[in-house]
Length: 568
Image (cartoon, rainbow, N blue to C red; front, top):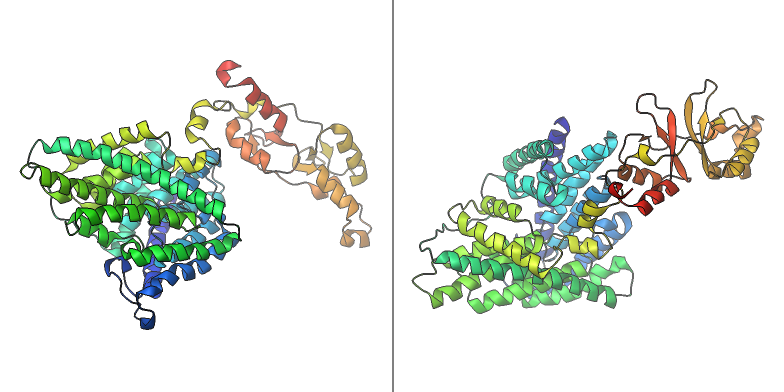
């Protein structure tokens, strides 16, 4: 609980800093607080360029964040949430500490220079990296570290959108993918803490300011149900186009990756010149659409333009989220649907804007397939409770439509394209239920710490192991020594020790590998095994800390060959 509070504080402060970075870079590179709301305006600092500066803004941004991402944190490229999902499911919640800083700078530069992406993906990755770093510094077990990652994600969403409930359910439904009571309590605490900090600085107002809507005729529920199907299909189409354009960019680009965002920025700049409403996140455009200020034809143009602009931003190597673009698409599709329904059924359809609001949640549900999160997010972002029933109906139907049309969501498809199946790993992993003590071997005979290196080399060569345990004079476990370390010490002697004529012994090279306990889950010990030199790891007794077994790659392969525990 104390760590959840700490991570929530950090995520709240990180969200504040991130929003400030976006505002700063947007004003610097566009000359306006939100360029999507001002049309083809000129940059106040570059009036001689007129509106054509918008063609160069993405190029300048790409030249800044492209090398930054390539050099320091390549996982900061893209929309961020799949990387966090993978870290929680397969890496014990381990996320490199530098990801938070690089992601914040890269995403703020990308959005500030015209990238048509959202800020939920970056803030999830920023908060998650913070939680992972806290867990790593304090050497927390993997299950606790994963929970801290979810706490960071929830805190980031809560603070940046002023939506504490949305942060909680986003983290539980998409990041942790379960609703355990203990996890729920910690995530709630982190989300509330981050939200309080965010409100203290950013204010306590609904994220979107929209007019009040209500359902005036029971027949409208049928229209909302149909809208759910349509918006769900729009969400799936967005997913397909996103990765189609990303593949096209991968196929076309042959230069260095750090230069890709700048060169691709010329294409994005050309699109922004034609549709300046696509600059950045575009919330003013979304609000105007729901308030009925656009004709149906323009709504459809903005819908297609957003799909292409967001896909192109991600495809050229930009950094930003896809949550806000999915809301934008839902607003355009829903308002266009409502306007059409109002023309066909003027006495029944009701307010056009209500369809835009419901469409936002339905399109997100269709792309992310997270119905609980979609309902809570829309309620908190808008503060509009009066249409909660049609919203729930449309979101459920959008989720079912998405499941019928596509196996994957906009997040899991990115991982499946890399050969990672989160659901398959959870349901059918042969390692599920196996513990280290089930498969460990007898430990090999240890090397005395006082044994000279020349003699140790002979023993290791005859042992058949690339690594052996080392004991001290009293027989206590000191660590392990690898064949590689002995070979390097013999071929590259230490000049300081040679000058003292001090013979090298095994204890000089002993090192402590990551601790693997006998009762630990086998799946959790894999990361330690594959990231450590040598061919095996000692398995330690939880009480004494002495080796009681030996874990090797062969033992793990034997489990994979035998299948799940029920088949062995």
